[in-house]
Length: 279
Image (cartoon, rainbow, N blue to C red; front, side, top):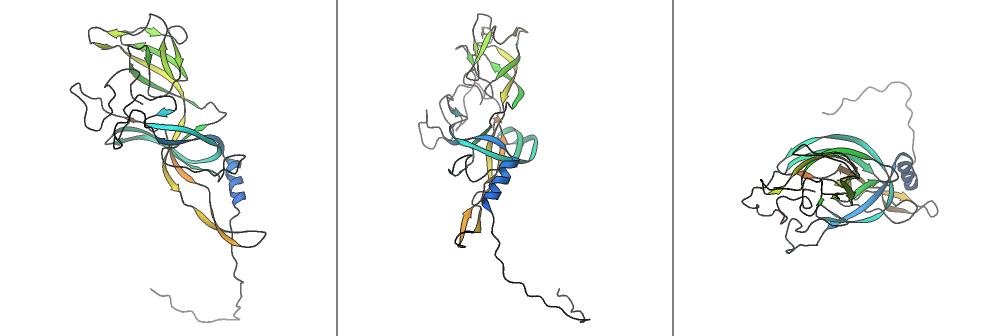
């Protein structure tokens, strides 16, 4: 509804403001992010082709190897100082299973620290804290593998406690070592094979691992603004820093498979076994 006009009263002053173009100072924007941020290692993600037999396979069919995790191959892109905000956590119930949600928003400068190489981010990329031991604790249940090498949900940094289904306790450095984030048994004292159940003995483990984040969503991907060149006063479009939503340890805990077989589209890995366990 339009407003009713008001009666003119007193002396009227009319000011004339010259048109003004406002430009972002992109260097100042980058410096602000870096002054409030933390140093991160950015790793680019791409689908791992090792073991894939058909280009339409939705999952990898080979065991995760060095540089590969959860069906993706990772390559170091560089170090960048990013700013965290709006950190939140909590479990989510999804059709795929239980997702331990701990998400936050991350804003990064246009370039990797100390370079003019642009930062380009895509979903499923990964970030680690640099120069900071950000270790978190979790527990897991593992089925001992006949190979003597067992893999947990996340790469292990240090084991706090390990007890098998018979109540036997084991110690790191005495009964087993941690190699490449996995349990490597070194003596005859180990969970081993359960002849009665015809499978590896189950054990519970509480351990520490290095916290990391996966890119869940690009909040600002193509983020541009008009800037003015201070030397020539020419206007041009420039890309601004990325803003992304990141998820800590983007892993689904799926329901166990039955012994009758696998559902279509599932991994060709065995339904059980330490080194080919969940990831």
